[in-house]
Image (cartoon, rainbow, N blue to C red; front, side, top):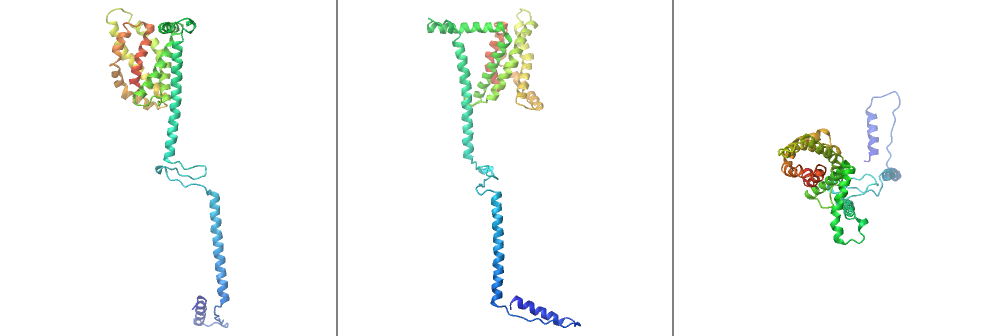
Length: 318
């Protein structure tokens, strides 16, 4: 029996079992479901299905408008791809990252090589062409013979004209080159160095070491104005205790601030490295300063010290 027939029977049964009322009972008739009813029912179902299908299609169309169809679903970073939510981003594989990293390294090496070769060419040209106004008729032997002597004369003239600036320039160059040597010593390729680190070290050497050393050597001579045998050992001892402690502290603190580190971190690092760094200097500088305070004139001491600094800055930087 169909559902419609069941409903009619239940309705009739419930009315027959109910108590009598004053009104006349309503008699329901059961009509069989004809083929026309089936057709209309199937039409209603098909109409409802088509409406639902249109609604689903409309929803998908709206979703496509919000999220472009050409977007790519990207994996997470661990799988080598980045998660992508808009068409502005594209998939970046791990191979692409390696290519970009290699290109950055090549560009950095090219810049470093250009700076080093340019600075080296300029320095060598300035040293070798100091007598270019007098080369007419000179042989190659005469040029090579007088180049060192005349460069030394030019350096002494610069010391007399502006001693502090000349010493600042020397110390800046030495600290710049010394940090480069330190990075090469650490295992980096010749042109794959940290340029910012070199500039920081060179800046400290230029602004502080040259000027402070100029006044320190004058102060040391005024502090020990004697000619006795014990003066040289006393100067070496004073240099390797008071002055070395002061300069090493200045060097590390200023470099820390140039790296934008916090004051707590800088002083914590200085505290942990102060004594080992001071004692490491005792393996080199006492022997160098025996020459500094016994043989080298006061105005030339910084040049001698800066030559030794190429070794010491390498140790200090590492």
